[in-house]
Length: 120
Image (tube, rainbow, N blue to C red):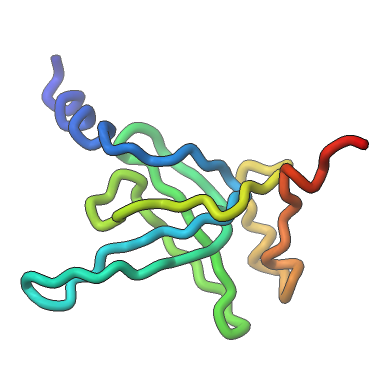
């Protein structure tokens, strides 16, 4: 077996939840404060894109904080990510939600939920 595939197999064993573009997620990131102390910092927002495959898979999370849009790119199998919690799953028609950058207020954060669009 190839050495790269052995290394990838080590990292992909980490259990990550299945989420898609448009989902609202909370990513808990490990931040070192002292040599032996680590705290968890949450970053909650909408997943606007997913890129790559295997151990090189990345996802971008966007949130609006104090009227300013903040985007952060996370490697999916990064050792600095403690866990990912799915807050709400969204229903979108695009693979990349870059159009949210131009939206302001509720329009920037509101994405239709899969549960809201049930047929009557």
